[in-house]
Image: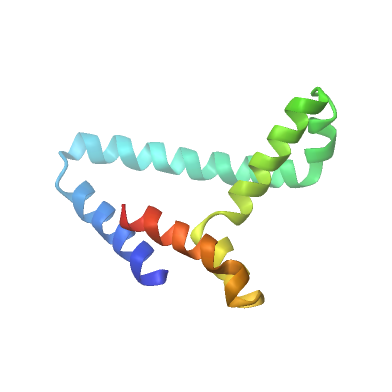
Amino acid sequence: MPLTWGAVTGLGLRCGRNEPLLVRRIGERLMMGVILLYLIVGVLAGENLKTWLDRFPDEVRVVLLRSFAALHTHNPFGILRFWLDNNIEITWPSMVGAQCAGLA
């Protein structure tokens, strides 16, 4: 898992290096904005998620809650944590899915 996703990161950085300077600067600023948005919304959602979700209808609330849970658990770090905490037979499908996504 770390080797595959490390290769994905390395290839992404290498491909970005060949772009013109203007494209790299725009990409850097865009990614910093996404990271800041993720951190700010993550902190706010961690404190106020129930209050925010109470404003939606039940169907939408369930979809949003499942989406937040999936973002938290279905990433390379979450799957690796799940792998280390549980039995291999339980976590094998998640690990294979993440590896296939990284290789694709």
